Image (cartoon, rainbow, N blue to C red; front, side):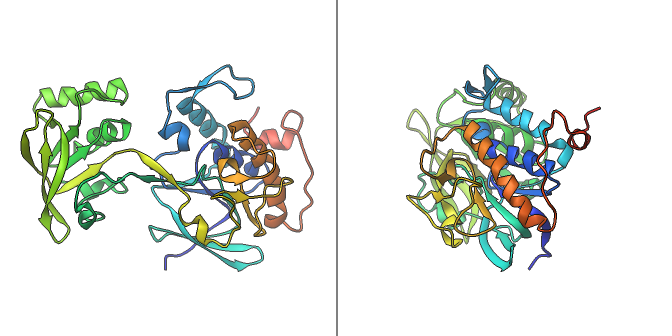
Amino acid sequence: MSDAIKTDVLIIGAGPCGLFAAFELGLLDMKTHFVDILDKVGGQCAELYPEKPIYDIPGILHVSGQGLTDALMEQIKPFHPTFHLGEMVETVEKIGDPLFRCTTDAGKVFECKVLVIAAGGGSFQPKRPPVPGIEAYEGTSVHYAVRKMETFRDKNVLVVGGGDSALDWTLNLHPIAKRITLLHRRDEFRAAPHSVEQMRALVADGKMDLRLGQVTALSGAEGKLTGATVKGNDNSITEIACDTMLPFFGLTMKLGPVANWGIALENNLVPVETSAFETNVPGIFAIGDINTYPGKIKLILCGFHEGALMSQKAHRYVYPEKRLVFQYTTSSSSLQKKLGVN
C-alpha cells in the first residue's frame, strides 16, 4: 500500500461546487485535496459545455463553463489545494472517529477527517467504442485517458474522435510519439478552432496523418495492438498500423463505486440533511447534483450554498476543540489576510 496522503478534507469531484467548497473550507483553515476521474478540473462545465454560456450565476450576466472554472481556480489559489486528476476513488474505509482511508484506482491512498462527495451526477466514465473485442486491449494498448505522457513515447498512436480531448492529445503527444494518426468519422471537428488549425498544419507538413472513417476491428495478440481496420466514408476498407489507440467517444455518467461506500442511496442519489448536507455517515458530506433532499434544485448556485454550510460543520470534525466564530470577508482582516487582500 502507498504511503497515505494526509489532509483535512478530501473532495471527490473538481467541478464548480467542489471548487467553491475548497474556498469556503480554506477560509476556515482546512486543507483540501481533490480527486477527479477527468484529466482536468471543471467537471461538466469544462468537459461537456466549456463554451456554453451560463446565465444564472448571481451577479454575472453570463459566463462560459470554462470561464467559470477559471475564475473559481483563481479564487482558491490562496489556499493551495492539491489536485489528483485522472483517478477515481474506489474504496472508502472508516478508520477513526472521524477518520477515513480512501484509495483510488491508481493505488493512491488518502487519510482525511472529512470526505466531501461533489461528483455531479456520479463519475464520468468514458464511452467504449463499438469495436468487437476491444476489451482484450484495454489497459495495455487501448487507453481512454492519458495519465502519463511517457507511456506514448515512440509509439504509433491512433487517436479516434473529433472533440477537444482528441485534438488536445493529438497535439500534445505529437512531439513524443513515433507517429500520430487522427481518425474521425467526418472532416468537421467539435474542438477549438485553433487546435483544428494546428492539426491541419501538421498534416499539411506531413508530420501526422488524418483519416476519415470508423474503426471496425482491431488486430494483435495478448493485448498488444498491431493495427486497426478502418471503414472509410466511401465504404473502402483499409488498415492503419498502430500499437496504441486512444478513443475519445465522449463520457457517460455512472454512480460508480459510491454505491459501495456504506452511504444511503435514493434513486442513485445521496440523501442528505439540509443543515450541513451531511450523509447518514458522520463526516461524509454530499453537495451539488449528486445529493437529494426535499426541495432540491440542481443549480450551480445551490451547490455553492451547500458547500458554504457544509464547511461550517466540517470545521467541527477537523478542529473539535476550536470554537468557530463566523466572520464576513468584507470586514474580517484575518480572512482578508488569508486571501492576500491588501
